[in-house]
Length: 302
Image (cartoon, rainbow, N blue to C red; front, side, top):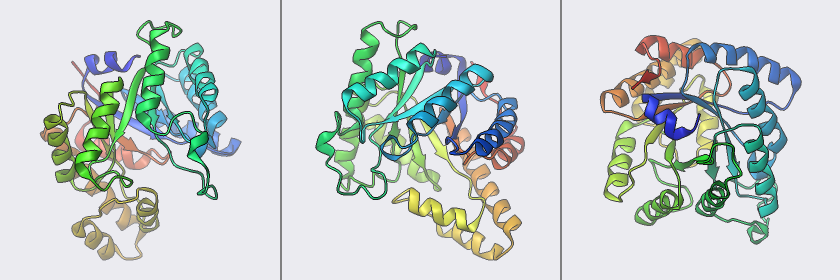
């Protein structure tokens, strides 16, 4: 379903993010969990794309499998890094032929060990240019849906790690929307005040597309540390850290703390009219399912 139709159908969207497993065993385990997610009736799901396209085929295969063998509506991530124009055209043509309706267009990160890679070899340096390219493809009429792909882009409530100037950062986001993005999904955050401020600044900048809040429940102390590494610049409120510390070595207690924190975030976001909530699941259904049950969530039809 095209993202424009999704936003017409649902007053509030609830969605999940998966990453493509690198082994057959991991893939089968994910699909067991996907059955759990499917029962929650999300508006859509997204599938990540490895740094520099390192999971290119895995991402494509997972997206097509979800599309063909479940009721879920998959949105693949696509990044600029390490791709020429012909690479990107081939990828989006394959998705169009497979009946995939939407793409999340991202700048992307360099793979580990390639920090000296010359980005001048890439067709596009920034997500804005990738959005423009997909929009040109849409206008060609090559997609079965004559509107072409629905296009999502990323937003950063706590600030983009590569852009220290917050005014310039908002200019860049506005450029992505003006280039043709249909919606924004945010990086994870743990303090809703950051999201509400971000949403207000988008409004001031004239950004009128739906903004979906990205939520990742803390489920372990080690997982919290990995989040700090992966989500550069992520701010962990002292109250959350204090609660995790109180739990000590009790893994179950740490998980309960993280789920409770994320549940309260979601409750507050819903109370303040969030357009959608996107759960970064790490391919596990348990924490997200508990949040759903606590809040009585389901994707709410208009």
